[in-house]
Structures are given as structure tokens and as C-alpha cells.
Amino acid sequence: MPIIVNLDVMLAKRKVRGKELATEVGITEQNLSLLRTGKVKGVRFSTLEKICQFLECQPGDILEFVPDELNPEG
Amino acid sequence: MTRQFSQLIALGCMTLLITAPFIALYFLINIELFATMARSKLGLPIQWQTVSDIQWYSLWLLTVFYVATGLAGIYFLRRAFSNFAKGQLFNHSNSRDLRLFSILLFVQALAKPLHFSISSMLLSMNHPAGQKMLSVSFGSDEVKVIALAMILWVMSDLLVRGSKLESENKQFI
Image (cartoon, rainbow over all chains, first blue to last red; front, side):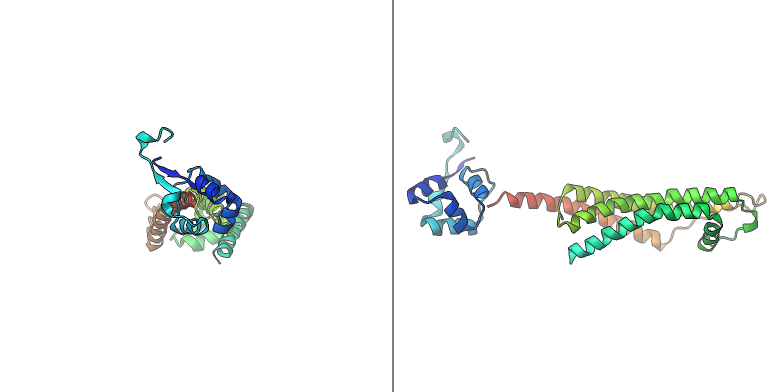
């Protein structure tokens, strides 16, 4: 998929653990894991807002568009 | 409230499914009572004194088949409402059960006039030639049941769509 989730990068940059983020955002660790691996169909604006608020970043820092031809994994 | 109503409906269906065979057996043993009920229910100008026991037993068997279609429908209705009572509103099983109920309701609506016709034919078999009967009845009750069956058919489709939406919604975080 051409949308890449860079949540792991942001978590590492902010030195925040996944469990902490999941608790703060109000989602399960299982769902956060799915989000981190990009195995979800979509992210709600409300979830994105909470993530951005907690990690003090922009949606663009978490989501990235990479065309299929540039993304061999896609 | 939905759960309580569903539980009540499921319980009612279960009670019917359990008691119906016993009632049928009771009527088989006490065929005179069945005959009395049939006489008043059918309201046909039949010479009742000509009707033999074998005819009453045949009518009983015919009625059992007719009622069995309704009971089969109730069985599927109970399954769906048991799931509703558990809070499982949208799933394929509910949709299939509701659809089967609507089909059986439709079949029963069509079987009702057929049952009436065969009953009239069966009970007037011993009448002299020229006085045998074939009574056909199709009233607003049957139309209502057919309309209800069609509504339930559409509802079962709605459940399938709802189930798809719910599973899609689960994939959004």
C-alpha cells in the first residue's frame, strides 16, 4: 500500500513506549500494533489527533505517501 | 430493551416448539376434540355425519404438515432472536435465519389456502356425487403474511449489509 505508517519512528524519536501511547490515545495495544504495521484500513481523525497531541507532531510525521514503484514492500 | 424483547420472543418460540408436538399428539389421541375444533374453524357446509374417523385422521396429518412449516420458521426465528438477545445483532447466521423464516412464512401463507381446499375436499369425500366440495379461500390475512414475509426478506438483507459495515468499521482505528 502506498501509505506508510511511520509511528515506530516517531515513538523512537519521542522515546515513548507503545503501551504508553495506547493508554493515552485510548486504543488497545493490539490495535496500536496493527496501526504500527500498517495492517489497518484507516485511521480516524480523532485517533490521529490524539496521537499527534501526545507525540507533539504533525499527521505528516506519522503518515507518508510512497508510490508503489518506489516501495518494493507494497 | 432490545435484548429483553429478543429474549422474550426467543422464549416464546421455544415454548411453541416444545409444546406444539405434545398438542399434536394430544389431538391425535383425542381425535373427537380435534374434529370439534376443525368443524368450528373450517365453517364449511359439510354433512358432518358422513365424515369417518379415517378422514379426521387424514385431516390431522395434513394439519400437522401445515403447522410443521410454521414451526420450522419459528425454529429459525428463535435462533436469530437468541443471538439478538446475546447482543449479536449483525452476523451472517442471523441474516440467513431471518431469511429462512421469511421463506417459510411465505410458504405457509401459500399453504393456508391449499390446506383449506384439501380439507374441504377430504371431508366431503363421502358426500353423494354432485355434492362434493372444493373450497378455495384467499383473504387479506394471507396478503398480510406475504407482505410481512417480504419485509423480513429485505430486513435480512439489511443485516448482511450491516454486518459488512460493522466488520469494516472494526478495521478503522
